[in-house]
Length: 244
Image (cartoon, rainbow, N blue to C red; front, side, top):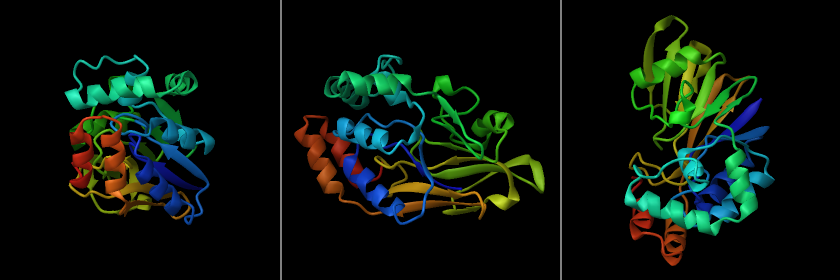
């Protein structure tokens, strides 16, 4: 089985189209998404439509939840809160209902998908170090759980030869044959935050026992113009050029 896994899309249509063009050449059997399909960006309707038409396996992210009034935005920064308010008005009722119906976790035969953590997905906690990942690794009953939320690609794992030690790697190719369990953050399609302004996605080949993190250049200026034209905060456009 060959999966493509989409990190936080955040309504970035140009980045999503770039990623999907690459995925078409990869012989993928199924596309997964770690959530935050919307928020920040200015093309929520178009992005939701594409994701629905492709029958992507999706989980609910914190921005998805906020846009359907399931999450208090008090602790969102002002730019994120403004984008949530704008997105609520931009989406029609069927798309809002689709977001509302998304599960917090998707369990597949060979992998699991969550947005922040597997241990308490409803909290939308961040995994930013090995200790953060331990509760989710303890709960994992398949080789890998794909997550997003931080927008920074990294794999946190327990190796077969030392299953009591949790380690991590930022390498773009991960040899799953040596790993007992792994939490793989696939980064972000629409808003990378590792100071690399490229879109990206992950590939998981269960037969080859490999995960690859793919990074691709895209037309950032096109999406920045879309954000500014929509009247969203200019910072949401500016940050795309910096990868922050």
